[in-house]
Length: 566
Image (tube, rainbow, N blue to C red; front, side):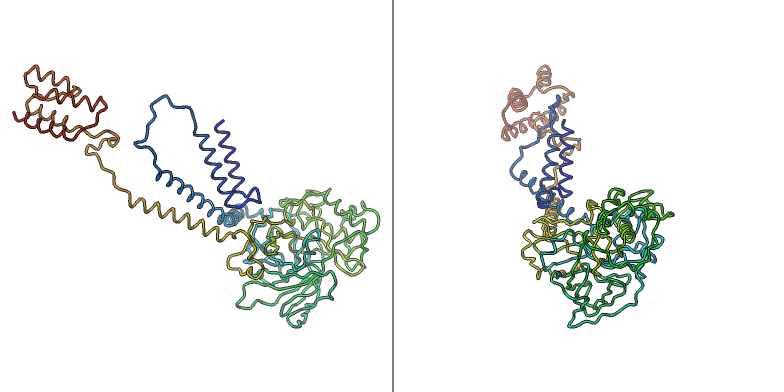
C-alpha cells in the first residue's frame, strides 16, 4: 500500500511538472509537485516500529532546525523552477539531435531543414523552411517527421474578424506542377513590383480585407520569402519581387536588423460547395488511382470537391511516421499501400483530385493554427505548426483555401494560451512588446521567474558553502575509538583510583567493579580511609539520578593522590 501511494504521488508530480493543468501557474505546479513527492515519501517511509532499540538524537530539535529545513525546501523548489524554466527547450533540441545521429536514415525533411545541398542543416531563424530556391519539393514520407516546438513566426492582427475564420493560415509559397512525386513552381519570369511610400500594392483592396503585422527571421541559406495570409493585397516593404505565383521575395535585411517585421493586408478565402471551377490551365496527367477515387464522388463540381475531404479522411490516416517505401511512387503508397501520411500527402491527393473534378489547383506551404496570447494580442506559429494545404481556383479567378488534412491531426490547430502564460520571446529578438500592450501581460514572463529562481537557488548554495566554513571542528576523542563521541565523559576519580591501586602493587583487574576491588583491599588491610565516601559518590552518579559535582570529585582526586604516596 505504501509503495502504491508513492507511485501515485510520483505520477501526480510528473503530470504537474509536464504542465497539467494548463491554467495553473508554473510556480504553483512546481510547489504542488514537491509537496506531492514529500507526502509520498513520508507515507512510504512510515512503517511499524522496529523491535530493536531505536537510536534517539542527542538533543531535541529547536526552532533554528525547523527554520533551516524550511529554507532548504525553498531553495530546492527554486532550483526545480529554474531547471524546468530553462531545460525543456534545450532538452528537446538535444533529444532531437541525438535521435537524428542514432537514426540518420529515418528522418524526413521537416520544418527547419532543407533538402539538396546542406540537407538536414537547421535554419538559424524561421521563414521559408521548405523553399529550396529552385522551387522544387519532393513528396517524401519514408522516415520520421519531428518538427520542434520552437517559435518561427509572430503575427499581430488589427482586426478581430481574423478569428472568425475556421483556421488561420500563413502562406509563404505555392507549387503548381506535379510529376513523379515532385512538386515544382509554375515557370514564371521574376517581376519586381514597385513600392510607393514604402508600400507595395499587389491587388485592389476589398471590404473584407484584414490588416496585420508579421515578424519572422530570414532564410540564412537562401532567398527570404514574404510570410502572409493568403491572397495578399498590400505589404509594407521597400521592394518586392514576385518569383512564382503567390510567392514573393523580400529585400535583404539591413545590416542593423536581424529579422523581418512588416505590416500587410490580405483577403483569405475558403472553399464552399457553391463555388464553380475556373477554366483549367494545368495539364491533367491523372494517375489511375486519382481517376478511380474521383469517380466515387457525385453531384455538382462543388459538391464533388467537398466530398474529397471525407473521402481522404475515411481512406487514409494522418501520421508523422508514414513509413512509405522510398523506391515506390509516394502518392500510390499513400493512397493504396500504406494509407497513411502527413499534411503534404493529403494536400497532394486533394490537389490532383480537384483537377480531376475540374478545378485548377496548387499546393501552398506555410503554417496553420497558431497559439493566441490575448494580452499582447499576438499569434505565435511554431515549427510543429508548419503545414501544407490545397488551394483551388474558382470561377471568379480567386484562389481559395481547400484543406483536406484531417482537423484532428493534433498539430497545427489553433489554441488559446492561458491568462498566466507568457508568450515565448526568442533570445536576442526584439519583438517590441513594450509597444504592443505588454503592460497588460498580468503575471511576470518566464525570464523574471527564472531570475527569481536563480537568485533564491544561488543564495541557498552560497549559504551552504558559508555554513561549512563556519562549522566548528568537533573535539576528537584521544582514544580514537569508533563512536567514542557518543559515550559519556570518563570518570577522572575512577581513573585516579586505578593508578593509585597499581602504585601500591594492588592493580585493579579488568572487569572488576569498584566495590569488588575495595573489598579485596580491605582483606589486605590496604583500603583507603575514604572508601565509603568514594563508593557512595560513584554509585549515586553512575546508577542513581544525582549529577556530578566538581567539588566532590576534586576532593576525591586530592585524597587519592595522598593515598597513593602513603
